Picture 1 (cartoon, rainbow, N blue to C red):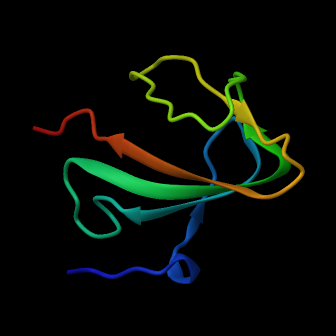
Picture 2: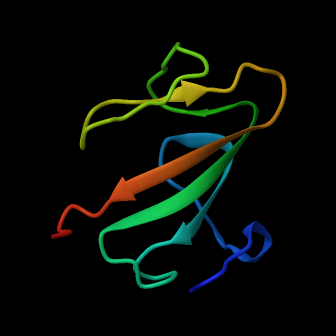
Length: 90
């Protein structure tokens, strides 16, 4: 078992994101996971990512290469769990 805490994770900076801290818990480089990676994004108020999505309190599944995005208009910080499979995973 590999335990990782949010405080020990290194941030990364994906293109098209603003007002957000993104960190990976598990992946090839972090824990050796070969099929997918898991991360968390903390969006500050008015933070977001390109291509808006207007449905609050919903789970979103986006196929590869599909446009997507969001903006945190809540006035409070918001966390998003991110799970992405590696394209070459068997």
